Image (cartoon, rainbow, N blue to C red; front, top):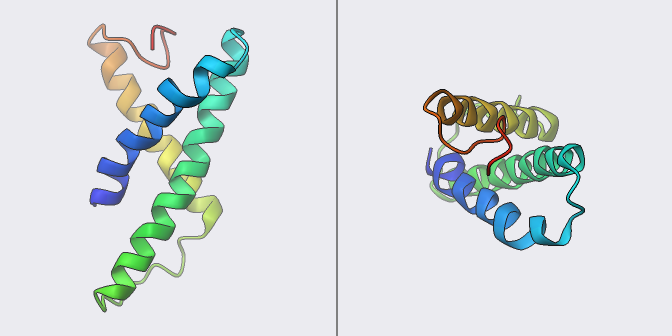
Length: 98
Protein backbone atom coordinates (compact mmCIF):
# COMPACT_ATOMS: atom_id res chain seq x y z
CA UNK A 1 0.00 0.00 0.00
CA UNK A 2 2.97 2.32 0.24
CA UNK A 3 3.31 2.46 -3.53
CA UNK A 4 0.10 4.43 -4.17
CA UNK A 5 0.27 6.39 -0.91
CA UNK A 6 3.92 7.45 -0.77
CA UNK A 7 4.50 7.23 -4.51
CA UNK A 8 1.39 9.29 -5.15
CA UNK A 9 2.89 12.22 -3.29
CA UNK A 10 5.94 12.07 -5.54
CA UNK A 11 3.78 11.91 -8.66
CA UNK A 12 1.91 15.00 -7.48
CA UNK A 13 5.12 16.84 -6.61
CA UNK A 14 6.54 15.97 -10.03
CA UNK A 15 3.55 17.59 -11.67
CA UNK A 16 3.36 20.64 -9.40
CA UNK A 17 7.06 21.48 -9.26
CA UNK A 18 8.53 19.87 -12.36
CA UNK A 19 5.97 19.90 -15.15
CA UNK A 20 3.35 22.56 -14.39
CA UNK A 21 5.70 25.57 -14.64
CA UNK A 22 6.50 24.58 -18.23
CA UNK A 23 2.89 24.15 -19.37
CA UNK A 24 0.57 26.79 -20.81
CA UNK A 25 -1.50 28.59 -18.18
CA UNK A 26 -4.79 27.38 -19.66
CA UNK A 27 -6.80 25.77 -16.86
CA UNK A 28 -8.29 23.06 -19.05
CA UNK A 29 -4.89 22.13 -20.49
CA UNK A 30 -3.32 21.91 -17.04
CA UNK A 31 -6.17 19.73 -15.77
CA UNK A 32 -5.81 17.38 -18.72
CA UNK A 33 -2.04 17.24 -18.19
CA UNK A 34 -2.51 16.55 -14.48
CA UNK A 35 -4.87 13.65 -15.16
CA UNK A 36 -2.42 12.30 -17.76
CA UNK A 37 0.43 12.48 -15.22
CA UNK A 38 -1.74 10.74 -12.63
CA UNK A 39 -2.58 7.99 -15.12
CA UNK A 40 1.06 7.44 -16.10
CA UNK A 41 2.11 7.62 -12.45
CA UNK A 42 -0.49 5.00 -11.54
CA UNK A 43 0.88 2.67 -14.18
CA UNK A 44 4.44 3.12 -12.92
CA UNK A 45 3.43 2.70 -9.28
CA UNK A 46 1.50 -0.48 -10.08
CA UNK A 47 4.57 -1.83 -11.89
CA UNK A 48 6.68 -1.03 -8.84
CA UNK A 49 4.18 -2.73 -6.55
CA UNK A 50 4.21 -5.82 -8.73
CA UNK A 51 8.01 -5.98 -8.75
CA UNK A 52 8.06 -5.55 -4.97
CA UNK A 53 5.52 -8.34 -4.52
CA UNK A 54 7.53 -10.66 -6.73
CA UNK A 55 10.75 -9.86 -4.88
CA UNK A 56 9.04 -10.67 -1.58
CA UNK A 57 7.63 -13.86 -3.11
CA UNK A 58 4.08 -12.69 -2.53
CA UNK A 59 1.86 -14.38 -5.04
CA UNK A 60 -1.04 -11.99 -4.98
CA UNK A 61 -3.63 -12.19 -7.68
CA UNK A 62 -2.63 -9.04 -9.54
CA UNK A 63 -3.14 -10.56 -12.96
CA UNK A 64 -6.28 -8.45 -13.46
CA UNK A 65 -4.32 -5.26 -12.75
CA UNK A 66 -3.54 -4.20 -16.30
CA UNK A 67 -1.96 -0.86 -17.05
CA UNK A 68 -5.32 0.64 -18.02
CA UNK A 69 -6.89 -0.50 -14.75
CA UNK A 70 -3.91 0.67 -12.69
CA UNK A 71 -3.83 4.12 -14.28
CA UNK A 72 -7.60 4.58 -14.04
CA UNK A 73 -7.66 3.43 -10.43
CA UNK A 74 -4.90 5.85 -9.48
CA UNK A 75 -6.74 8.74 -11.18
CA UNK A 76 -9.87 7.81 -9.20
CA UNK A 77 -7.87 7.74 -5.95
CA UNK A 78 -6.39 11.17 -6.67
CA UNK A 79 -9.78 12.65 -7.62
CA UNK A 80 -11.28 11.31 -4.37
CA UNK A 81 -8.40 12.75 -2.36
CA UNK A 82 -8.77 16.13 -4.03
CA UNK A 83 -12.54 16.01 -3.42
CA UNK A 84 -11.81 15.68 0.30
CA UNK A 85 -9.45 18.66 0.10
CA UNK A 86 -12.07 20.67 -1.78
CA UNK A 87 -14.73 19.91 0.82
CA UNK A 88 -12.39 21.23 3.50
CA UNK A 89 -11.84 24.45 1.56
CA UNK A 90 -8.22 23.58 0.76
CA UNK A 91 -6.50 24.04 -2.63
CA UNK A 92 -7.43 21.15 -4.89
CA UNK A 93 -7.85 19.97 -8.45
CA UNK A 94 -11.48 21.07 -8.40
CA UNK A 95 -11.06 24.69 -7.32
CA UNK A 96 -7.96 25.34 -9.42
CA UNK A 97 -5.95 26.68 -6.49
CA UNK A 98 -3.33 23.94 -6.52
